[in-house]
Image 1: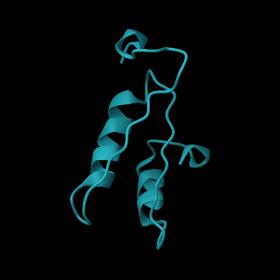
Image 2 (image 1 turned 30 degrees about the vertical axis):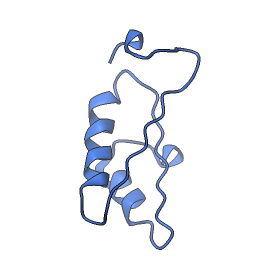
Image 3 (image 1 turned 120 degrees about the vertical axis):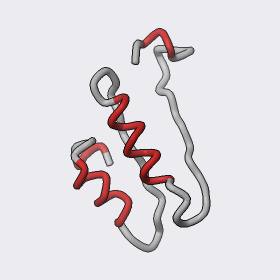
Length: 69
């Protein structure tokens, strides 16, 4: 994705994804990471207070290094 698509190149672009359990949030994050990883510096913050399942899934898929999840 070219840098010109972001409104302000000096600030990070942030995207929040919410929804009920099983709605596909983690898969959406996976697909976004796969799509953006080659031209963009990425980090993902997961907010599951009970498990690390989502973070571990993203790590197993290899879309981001451990220090970026």
